[in-house]
Image 1 (tube, rainbow, N blue to C red):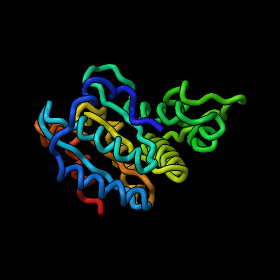
Image 2: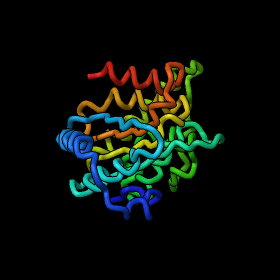
Image 3: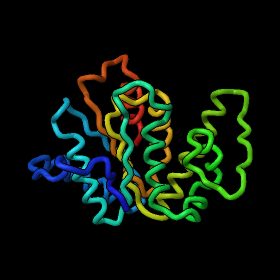
Length: 218
């Protein structure tokens, strides 16, 4: 199991004080997710208030409940490929499982992941070429459905905490995928935890639409 080694170091070593109400709410969400009632939780606030540190605290709690914790961070710098926070989380999953488990869990999504990030998929036999429909919307739906299916299979093996950090920097494709995956979580053992700087999310910001969509879901 992992809590995301990129978030280790002096920050994690400092004593954590406060945020009891937030932590209590997230612990409740973790319990529900472990019981098969998937949840999405968002941590919002200004820079430096401790969003990532709070996420680390709940990640440490998740590990004690035998959850697998996977991190994906949205970089502030330009140039990251589409779906970058999701690809980071999948890379972490691949890194902590043996090849046979990864192959089974990827399932039909293997070709989709290979198209996004060839290093994610190692196979002794070549993967079948991915035949995408000409319609872009249909192709995106197939991609999202394949990725959502991967997370459902992964969560069937072990409950998951997926942490998507700094969503105010996320690319639009990653946000649309977040919306799709969130809509499939109701019976999955997944808690999806996002953090973002609320001051940067104006009405015209892409994350604003995503937050509205999430708020409309049960």
